Amino acid sequence: MSTALSTNSSVRAKHIVWIAFTLMALLVLVRRDLSLLDAHSFLRQRYAAISVLMWAHGLPGALALLLGAFQFSSRLRRRYLQLHRVLGRIYVGCVVISAPLSILVALALPTPTLLPATIIQAVGWLVTAGTGLYCIRTCRIQQHRAWMIRSYPFAMVFVATRTLNMLPAIARMGVLGVEISVWSSIAVACFLPSFILAWQELAVSPRSRKALSTA
Image: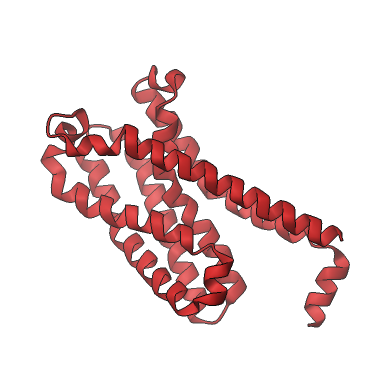
């Protein structure tokens, strides 16, 4: 009974998180990214000198952000395992393209203080996705799941930082506010997934753990 209640609570929490993140992504799309279609917008002018580099980084990054969300669907994995595998390969490919290019973008933009943060995010994204790929290639299913859970938050940083930057208190800080939101989001992406995975393990009762071990 307690296991069922715990599972239901976990499912509800997962749905709440995904709904909140979807709303954040839509907010960023409407309030910020659509302005890139306007040739006279601030963002379009800011990225004009590196427009090709931005598209080469941004499109794979956006695709990884979209496809990665579907990889957490248990129903998709059960019913369409082959599709899950294909989407996973595309996700890792997008990471391999987008992450290194983000460093080149940071080098080209006039905010050198954000370069270390970009390097940490890019390396973290590459290492976690690569480790997840290695685990599934060597049939380590549980480890694969854990490392992909660690990987996706590095993609979520894109949405999280831009959402935080819209808050009036942070927006009034200018560059300092951007640095605070970027470093805070990366710190959460680095440590929160492992914390959640550890607590999920601790939440399993000794009797259930013994039954799983015997099985």
